[in-house]
Image (tube, rainbow over the protein chains, first blue to last red):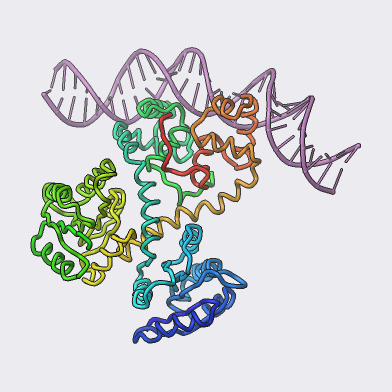
Length: 230
Length: 230
DNA sequence: CACCCTCTCCACCTTTTGGGGGAGGTCAGA
DNA sequence: TCTGACCTCCCCCAAAAGGTGGAGAGGGTG
């Protein structure tokens, strides 16, 4: 049985969604909330599997509430079972979508969704998947393809480098100095200079700073996940 | 009426999908193909709105065929009306997904999808949206959130910089030398050195290469869109 | 075998970079 | 008005980086 919580400041809308979901044999609406603050408290008490969250609400908006609820879970980890959030809103400006995904939402659907699709979304998300409104998926793909796309022609230039040279380039893209690279690769400092020189000349770059740019642009290095604790 | 083409090397599978779709009143299967090469030719001749494309096929795989078909359209632009591709496969390794999105696919669904959902996917994509298998959407979101997320705390460090220093940092992240930055900002080379020094010291970085890394990690610079034509 | 590529290292040199001061100017706010 | 933050520029100096040329060792290939 899927335990669902519905959060929306309009009681009528809230009841509507709750009724649709409660009508399903495998879904049970265990809580409702009208503000972000209430949502956080109710989530703690009722431990729902899925939260349907509106964005525009008094006291605290749904994105902030989502972030806090999911953050709490990260900390608790062992205790609370994973709860997942579907953002349910009337609008879909990019800013909302990005913030929602950043907050950790697993879904972002518009309120004009057909009831069966909403039920489907709940089941999908409960099952470990994610569900976005079709237009949003489209935009997400576009953004993604853009990032992937550019690397294409650049990545081909990487082929001209030898294995060792690519390793050196990766190290440069990590912010390492020649001495550090030497240590990391167990080779002499002079050797590193040789490799760096050929990397720069083969790729048509001038200095290591440009090499770092190149590495990021072609996908050898990617933003995210790195500690910039130099 | 949606004109659909089905591409799969297994005739049985192909007919199955075609029958399901043809059964819908607003969908018409106008062509079938068994290889990537056939698909390209058939797409040219029959001008379908939607192509359901398998990946593993003899002669040319579905990803390559997708890329070529969509590329041709980009060139033609005015002539051919936009055609959109849904990748339909049994497997979903990340590599396939990325390549598919890069090729320009608007959908990526698994063959175990229920028939109604397939029909729904076709209509959604024809309508300008995109449809991914739930698990894939999930992974895409994770990747996206990761990219968005990390910049957060780092971006705060940017606040310590003055406006001019941020400009200089951006220029560094562009691969510019001090002399080039001076020229770009209409200031003396000595001034640039001053700014660079304070940027490095304020951010706790050692050299400009690390500054480039920082700029990418915190989102001041982003991969994609830049010409690396130093 | 000779040949080519790669990886390893060395020496010498020039340029760039980064750190340490100092100094004058503007401009906003206490 | 004075202080502080910011931008601008200067000098000197040490360290790092980058270019050039050379050289030996190992591994493949024709």
